[in-house]
Image (tube, rainbow, N blue to C red):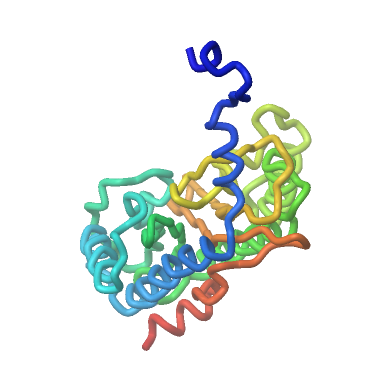
Length: 275
């Protein structure tokens, strides 16, 4: 009807235009997102003092909500995942009703919302404050994948190409830590690669005014976009799951880690939990 009444106007679908505008964040948007991240940082550091064997997952979730509200956040950007022990292998675990036990790891995926922008952090820590030998091996393997992904996430690459490259690196890492055998890699199904047994989700997603923000997977990444980087290692035989996630702003030459101040090294986490 509008085209008939006003034929000289040019009509386009708004969804595609807004999707592209929404993908590229301005400096002002990053300032608001950084505030959400800083609130999440303070909350995580508080949790390192709060978590002890015997605490319930829902008590940790409540503590997160309390710390967010104290810092004038609107609340959690999404349902917090507080997954101790084998629960960490459940990607969107929401029950948060189990006791956290001595000797286990606990995977916590949470983020504050501030000014309509969403932070998205994941850290995996030892309930008793000390990583076991095998736990630290797996944790450091996951951190290696995280750092490798950060080194290649830059303008020009697509998420599909990037994910394939991280998969190649994951294959080598999993061989090194004894999760895969060379024969499994040699005979793998190209549609369901061997490493997928232990890393069965995407490595990155767009982030912004939604925690899984609008954005393309197939087109080249552009400067100004914001992504998570969140590799994980999930081992059914060892009843263990580890995931490490930070948020990155894509720049012309690479990226900027907006969560660089949040403790990530196993040794730093252990030191803060001792205090």
